[in-house]
Length: 290
Image (tube, rainbow, N blue to C red; front, side):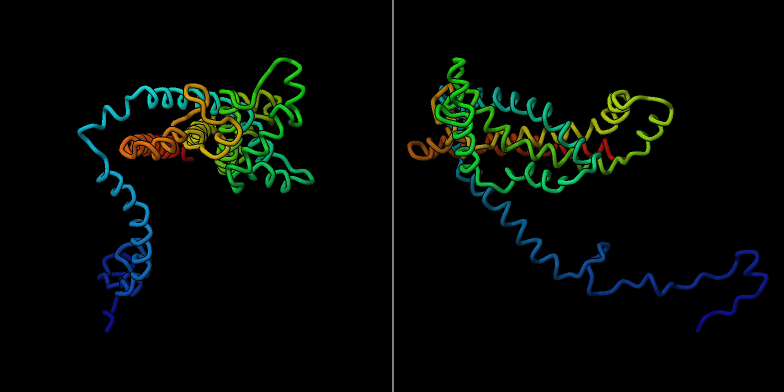
């Protein structure tokens, strides 16, 4: 039975409070989440599916020999090459991906959806297919390879081929991430700047880029991480020459045949790098949230 509230109590705000029916929590939902409890079971299984292989790898590592395994001559050469080529490919992704993301997020013209599909195509292509496509573009007998050959430039099976392969697979990650950041930021500040008389270049340089800079940083980190893990396109287009094209994933693959302990140790190095990269990307995304 509800208590009777007098007019004086209603006006002065001294009416007794009553339990709200809307605050009753259903016993069938998770506490504080609003989700049915059964959802947590497959979520837990999915998380276990991701975590258990990592735990198995940690258990398999020979910790007594870990430092020696990851500091061998071939391992250090592969790590150094991977870091150099990933840095170069990330720079290329930023130089080409930023204008691409701006066009996709800020322009409207016929064929835009088709263009976006082409840009994101490397996301769904098998890396080996990407490597073959690059080989028949920049290889000796490729679409552009003969021209480069005449100029004395050799791309296929060189360090440059590693950079191009990494850029090919990592570029869509930067474009997709940065396009989302641009759409989230909206055009309000750009419209204000344009209304005050700023030309498009000034708006881009003084408003748009600073506004999405944290998102661009996160996108670049994701592109670097994807480039660091590239395997199929690199092997197909660049080969596996120690110190020239043999990146860390290729070194892990080769070590798996001859020294499984070294392969596991190097794999753990990549896992640690990936965790650090994800932490940096999420941290910068949080700082850049509007």
